[in-house]
Structure formats: C-alpha cells, structure tokens
Amino acid sequence: MTALAENTGQTLVDGMGRTIVNLRISVTDRCNFRCTYCMPADNVEFMPREKLLSFEEITRVARIGAGMGIKRLRLTGGEPLMRKDLPTLIGMLTKLDGIEDVAMTTNAFFLKEHAKTLKEAGLKRLNISLDALDPEKFRDVNRRDCLQEVLEGMRVSAEVGFKSIKVNAVAMKNFSETEILRLIEMGRSEGFEIRFIEFMPLDSDRNWERDKVLFGHEILDLIRKKHDLVPVENSLEIGPASEYDFADGKGRVGIITAVSNPFCDHCNRIRMTANGKLRTCLFSADETDLKELIRGNASDEDIVKAIKDAVLIKEPGHKINLDDFEQPQRAMHAIGG
Image (cartoon, rainbow, N blue to C red; front, top):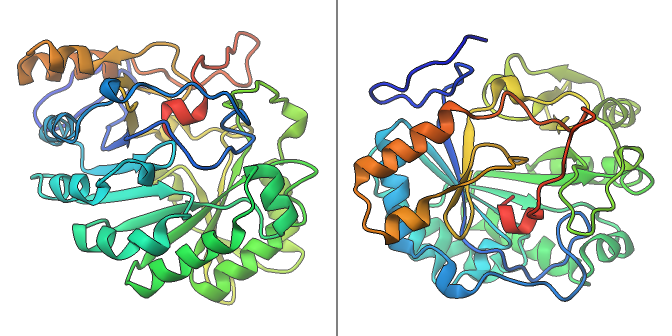
C-alpha cells in the first residue's frame, strides 16, 4: 500500500490507494425482526423520522458520489422495506448518470408483496439475510416465527425475474454447524449463491466473543465433507467474499472472513447511515455529518470536499483482532448492514 493519495477527476481514492466504487445507503434503522447479532429484543430506540434523509437528499448524495466515481449502490437498513415507497427511491437512483447497479439487502419478509414493483423500479440484485432453515433455530436467532414468509418472498423474487439472489448467513459456533449444508443444498437447488459471514461484534447487546464465531476454515471443512470446491480467482478484488465454485458446476458459495482474515486491503466501499452520517468503515469510530451540510444549504462542492476528506483518512482496516479494538457505539441496525 502507498502513502496518502490525492482524489482526482472521476476517481475516489483513499489514503491507502484503494479506489472507492461502492456506496451502501441505509434508508431506515427500523426492522420487523430482532436478530440477536443486530438488535436488542425490545425497547429499541429508533431515529425520529424527521432525522432520516429524504429520498431527494439521498439521491443528491448518490448523484454527487457518482460524479466522484461511485458506480454501485446498495440499500440497507434495518429492513429497507420498512421505508414507505422504497421503489420510488430506487427509480430515482437508477436514473443517475454513472450508477451501474442498485442492489438491496433484505430479510425477505415483505418480498412476496413488493418484489415485482422493486424489479420494475430498476433494482438489479437482492441479498437476503437467512441464517437457518430449521424453524426453531430461525426463531431463536430472529426472535420471530416467520420462516415460511421469508422462503415465499425468496420464491416470488425469483419468479418475477431477479437473476442475482444471494443469501447471507451469519456463522455462529454451536448454532450454524447444522445449517451450513441445509443452506448449501437449498442454494444449489434454487439457484441462490449462499454466503457465510463470520459473526462480527456489532450486536447491540454486546455479547460478542471470539469463541462464538464459526470461522471460515471451519465452514469450508463442513462443506467439503460433502462437496468438492474450486476457488474463484481474485474474488476478493470484486467483493468481500472468498468465492468457491462447486466442482460439479452446480452453484457457488462465498465465505466472508471478516474476523479471521479480513478483506480490508481490498475494501472499496463507504456507507451512509439513515440519518446521513458517512462512515468509511463498518467499525468506524468517526462519522461525517452529510445531513448537516445538506440541510445547511451546503453546495455540491462542499459535500464533495467532505466526502473526499473522509475517504482520504479511511481506516487501513478494522481492529477486531487487536487489543485496542472498541465496538462501535451504533449497533448494526443503526449503521446499515
């Protein structure tokens, strides 16, 4: 990695020489689930609605970002579909010059109702959070009893024409071991890419411990008991997952080793919370308040400068494996998944 680099022209480059092309946009911190690794079971304090960025404000930031080299957007939450009229925002974002792809991460509960309108609005890809196919385990981790509604939402999404549907499963020790192959077989059968994510310290209950993480090599060992895998070359240069094709040609699996072998050297993303705070890392201690600039009548040039300044000092990597690591004050639902 190089020393400090300057942002020039249509390229947004951080101080480590990494080119930023992805912007993750949280549209709400509200969710109809209460996943153990993300939110408390009850007494959740949500952001007041007037504190959330409007669709016009979100689109302005995305437009400015596109002019700086941002090419791909992902809508997150909370649960994005808790935000009313979300297809309207998607339509606004897909019309922006320079934006090549708009995707969304969702728990799939509302997809049966909304998948068709999302597709028609221009949404290209879906990532679906699903940690277990066993109904009891699903209920334990999500604190909701609605597995069939989630599976139905996934089925409808495929039927209306979504070609890229990935399933994100958080991998937790003494929980996920029995679910790994179940999810794999579903993915191979239905055409979904399954991605396992090592459990990260972003839970609001702050119960994370390293001993609770099911590590990437352990996940691979479980899969290889039944399937031969072929590594996909340079997959980390594209996204956060180390990807593997099944040797028989039926599907692909991804492993996101956020704890044991972080992908920070290849990180090409920044994120914005639902109330307009720019974060250069999921585990950032610092935020840049874009909402304050926008509502303070700042010019586009002012916002460009704020983004450049933040990106220039983007963290080399998170510190989960270091003694001075501090868990973010915001839980996952308040940052944006």
